[in-house]
Length: 214
Image (cartoon, rainbow, N blue to C red; front, side, top):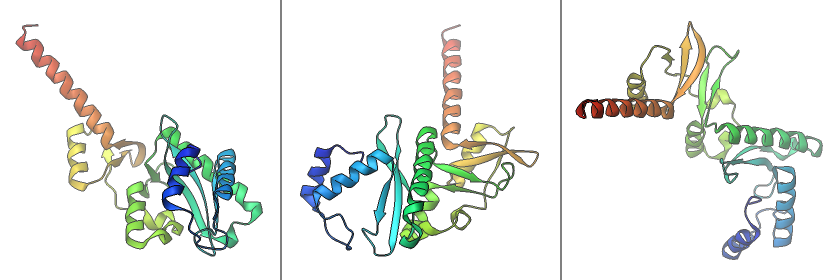
């Protein structure tokens, strides 16, 4: 909400109000807007047991290429872990993570012990799937608990059609590219579709040239 114009927040409040959940819930517009101003200034928000007693959360916005907030990244856990001296350090890390995700438009990460060998792949779909199964409690899990460890890999010599077929059949969108047992890159469904469209466009131009006698 810190990224929203004030009048838009006020319209939302007129529809929903500010329901109290705990003793620290922000129950008045003045308190809410003061908190939103603090959030905008430092780049991350802090939920001080405002929804659930004993649980706190720090979050930052992920932005699109136009700077609009489209998603978020957060860290949550027992309130005792979010001591005043740790809040700034955690908030800075979450904010930096959100900035990297925004700038690089990352939706998937490859999990590797050494930057060369692949242990698994973790995507936003993996996280959303677990949230659907078990609720927000899964956000406290380790990456190892949620990542896809049985993964398909590609080689440098495979063509776009073959990779597209494998992705379609397996219903996944990212594939590490391996050479001599080490990862040298990551190919996405978007990469494959773009390559295939480019290939089709060249074939179309060639056929048109043949028809026109060029």
